[in-house]
Image (cartoon, helix red, strand yellow):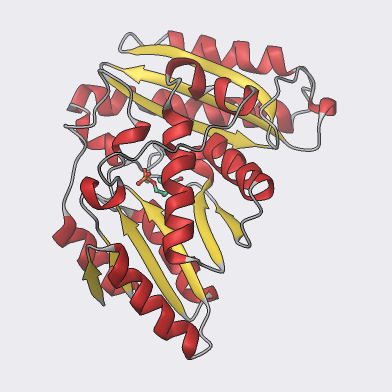
Length: 282
Ligand code: AMP
């Protein structure tokens, strides 16, 4: 497995693979890889002849006062994990390689898909995500790209963007990978103190509560999100950013399970200073 830092090197590798008639999968990540990322890479390895993992903390998707500088990084450990699961190439560029001096073109999706849920507190986030993912798609030109359901809004946004901009790429969504006690795996979990780590369990407990209510026949989504909020509010270290039910495809708010084909119940919760997300789809 190779680690490369330039766009030219990625293009040369992919060109050679294409010459041999091989298919290519892409797994975009910000590094500090864990089991969640691993599941995406494994899926990509099982469905493609060659797999590229991008490992890049993308500055354009971080707002002011967010954790861009503090975001954990460990390329050596990432390389070990990628090599173990059979990835072929890690693309690990510098910021100056991805954003050449004078760069001024962004991919800016309009409407509720990017202004709802996480977009409310992170207004420039999805512009950064759409921009960097478009660039990665143009650099790697994969047949398939793999994204986690953990970032359900991101997955919906990317699917929409691929449709809108006619990328000839299949977007594959992969299930949330959790710790044994339920906490969704995240690079940001490393920020949590011991007490916060315990408190963070309210997110997955709220997910379970919502799922149980739905399974026992509750169709009123406001009742479900209210119960979830009640559970989270009882934890002193937790502060709710949002708990909302939306149409999983277009992120429009919904109030009944009968309002759309797939309901996404999503949340963002601060545990101390760390903002964590979790969700379920039904
Ligand atoms: P990140 O490095 O956090 O930007 O995540 C890179 C990709 O891994 C995204 O598509 C995420 O949705 C996915 N991912 C992160 N955590 C998990 C998880 N716990 N389960 C499944 N996918 C995940």
